[in-house]
Length: 242
Ligand code: ZN
Picture 1 (cartoon, rainbow, N blue to C red):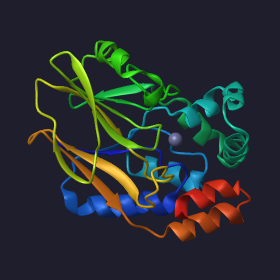
Picture 2: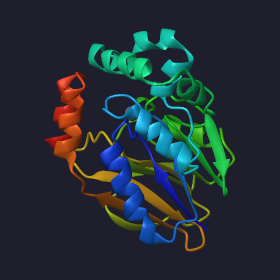
Picture 3: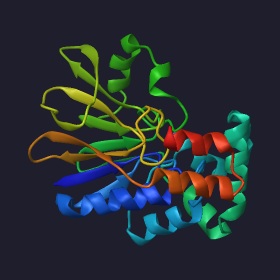
């Protein structure tokens, strides 16, 4: 079984389509979204439609939480709030209802999917939890591996012999051998915060016990221009191309 993990697409259809094209030759059985499909980007409606057309299950991100509980808009910084308020206006009521109904976590093929941190938080950032507390977090879910997004930064936490170690997650293959347990941050498809404009995603090959990290170039300048053309905050366009 090979599954693709995509996170933080953030209304960036150009990046999302590039990742789907990149997936075509990779022998993947299923793809999953770790949430934040909307917000920041210029094409949230198209992203939601494509997600549904491809039958890609998603968990609830903090941006989708705003579709469910509009009072959570107050938690966002002013630019993000403005972007999200416009996004929610553009989405059809039925699309908003779809997003609001997304689950807080999924347990599929023996792995757990959460937007922020396990067991099921869409709002807490991984970096908010000190390393010495992460060991306890591993006790809060039964799956050996949990995939997260939310920070838009790739990273790996490994629990082995009672100790948690943090490791970089560069491109290429990484073995996630038992009995170790792992927390994998797959980075962002559509709104990078790591200084690399490419779209990032992961493939988990359960049979080989190998995690693959992929980076996909796409026309980020076009996606940035659409953000400006639609009157969304310019800083979210700049982040795509710098
Ligand atoms: Zn996000």
